[in-house]
Length: 124
Image (cartoon, rainbow, N blue to C red; front, side, top):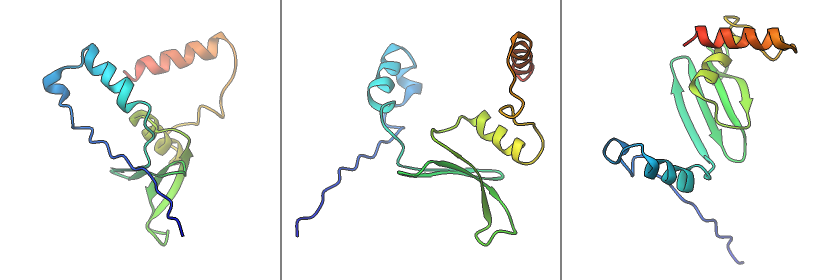
């Protein structure tokens, strides 16, 4: 039987030391051409309260430690793309009642947009 071949590429993000080469135009162009088009296949980031994972072709998942679960973790959110650090913290805060879900309170109009802007600026 003919075996199916699969191409696997591993990228070392420390291959180019941006501290030495700088974040100039060359660094941005390297990232845009080489790294940005690649999709993370396996991803694991540990957090103080849980983990962020991905096993391709599944989505990114955010997990929270939970002693009541058999494996010790409970999935709290599944996402199509890699979330930023603030997005991950917001997911945790919403899940644990420390923040309201903006998607549930989404309204329309200038005042809602202005309120979101002011809230964002106060977090800086």
